[in-house]
Image (tube, rainbow, N blue to C red):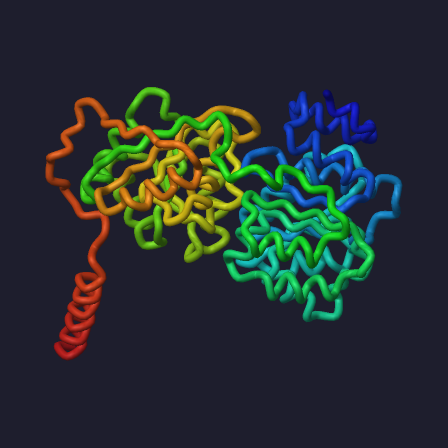
Length: 406
């Protein structure tokens, strides 16, 4: 089966060919026909399965030949990075058409986004919070929306966006097409689907959650204080071109990125406390290959789509199987292959066993030959909170002493 079997407009097929797409992925094969027919769709689609094209192509097909300058499609996404990625796909697939669009998310000026509303961008890709900021202004209207897409719906609910989503839905026309994509299907998503969708076509809804096919998994038991030295050695192994490394907190992401740089590893970090400009710069350097390692927290990593990402590393074991699935799905995207490595301390073994039970497979425990697991680390990655507070108090006292002396 090829993309020509979908009866897409030649301009869209030309864009598909220019992107190097050959055969549709399973989610594209199953979702594009009902979406083209105007049906509502509920799809449980793994991260990296090609779902963005599965909803963007039907939207563009529907808009071709229609007057431009009217916002007719809205895509909601949980994070800035994912919204930017979707809009990038939209531009690539619409490159040979006159269909325009815009990305609406926080951390950047509202001015250009206001301009997009006023000119009537055909397709808006937005995060819920920033979209509501605009919708409080008279220039922002969504009363001509014909298609609504909720992407990564499970993460949007995890992040507390359900009230925002309901507020946005009240501002849309009642008669519209709804497409809901989610990597997992917890009860809250099923309830939202019943509320939002009308006689939907359901895809993969019964399949249990599992990591993407093509990912090789390995767990490295190691003392917590030896994780950084082990990671440095793993990054030096043949075949490790680049790595997306996950930590459980923003503070650990900062400390780990700084520690890697001190070890001579080009690294940067991306998390919610960094400005949008810093996040965009770090992601661009990672994609360009000038930054070999990108350290991220779970929420910030939604939307990171890097062609040829060779390794995902769980520096900290995630607390839930869903997070593990999302993390390792950053590699082996679109049916490619990749490696997922998890550094597991003795205290994290219970969490890892819970993940194994949820995904229905055992992750092999391995050791790195030649690495001294009994060595003492040269530095601590995580400074205990009490120590950090004591250091801050001491610095304040020194500052007061300097002021008294002057």
